[in-house]
Amino acid sequence: MKITKEARRTSRQLFRACIANGKLDDSNVRTVVNTVAKNKPRGYIGILDAFTRLVANEVDRQRALVESATALTPANQTELQSSLSKKYGRPLTLEFKVNPELLGGIRVKVGSDVWDGSVKARLKALSDSLSA
Image (spheres, rainbow, N blue to C red):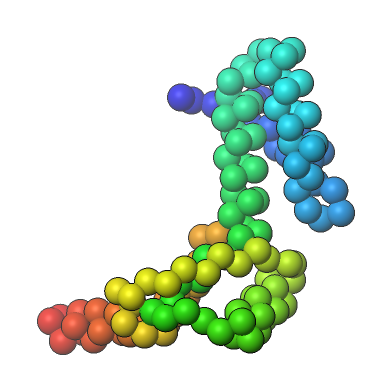
């Protein structure tokens, strides 16, 4: 679905209104969605679509997925959380997963940023360089 410039502009304004103290306020997001859905302004579907994308991107920026070949100790988890929060300049919510396919090391995904320090990624890079 094509979104008009006006709908995109309106969704950005609504999104900025949902930011409180540098963080996305859940109650403001609910209020905006309910108000737009109730009042149905011109192009409201486009507005809600663009607004949803903006909110999803912001939520992804505040969450980090950490995959490791084996379970990380609580001390390692705490250290990783503090270093990532420091690097990004904001508190992050970390989700830890065990992925034996990595063989070793960890993979961290924050929003669209991915750091892959896994053995699997290194072996793939080595294989690619040898086959080139």
